[in-house]
Image (cartoon, rainbow, N blue to C red; front, side):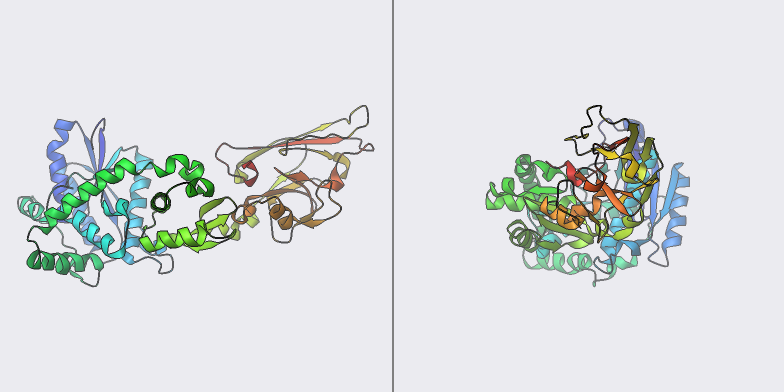
Length: 452
């Protein structure tokens, strides 16, 4: 957890778990040479939120530590009721953690999860239906997040808390059995202890550890041969070469990377409806995600990517020069040349370069993304056609077509970068000046024409 680590944010809610975590780390900071800072997320969901925030500030002052408080809007993480308030709060909290990590340079965030949390999470996921990776429950270390109390039971934490300089704040929602986790904590586990095994929690911890070891051994196996699966795509041919269990593991891993609970039913629906479906098959997933069958791959993307907000984005090209286009992640270079001495046409096989008749261009040119109804006359084609039909013929995936850029002269498309120029603006023997253009994409830019 602390190998080569010097800076740790302590996530402090004010409850007994986080207060004990803080006290333990404060006692160990000299031994490990740690710089600690307290970080509190105010969800604003309860009347006590402001009192808890003030309490955390007092605790920080007592320990002589810096304290950062961030107030978050949980409701915007609800996705129109798709998520429970608890899940939305968790997402808001981790988003705040990540922002603090990015802005502060701290290496780790210490969280107060303990052994009882492991058992409760395991049972919840077992009830809802989850694969071995999800049943492995809460890992001690995941990226920058560490859980120093993960092998400590709640009763041990409560005993330690009696010796703290502060009495912990108590969250009344922890007693609300309408919340599934609380029903597991207050009803299911006591029932299992009283009716089956008094040491059921210790037995489940052992099972969790075995599952985690088994999953870690095989977790990377399915994806190693799936190419683009490391990103947002799953190669169908590679996936089908796996066993049925391997296909399910690959799909589970993709869901986990998007923060989507990989229940058995969800994974199986995804496999049958999309992986084995026809081109264009779509499955709506939690948190605004979509899975779409696009020819030889399954693509995972957020529904926000389909919003028409990019329609408003435009850039002007006033004439010769080099123009940075930050809104498009690209750069356009334009220069004017004399036509070839032999009167021949300027032809290039590079789809990112275009030779156009300067005299036919009406400046300033405009660069924007494709819009519904766009039409142009592809070079070599008999006449005008819808740009959407042109992209369909080239097998550009539906979800990627909105990322295609077009360059216009007036209201006419003169070039679709990465694909083809317009027949009406090509260089001919009568051309007196040639506009040589090149569009260069940034390293992080994504564009459909990059697929080969």
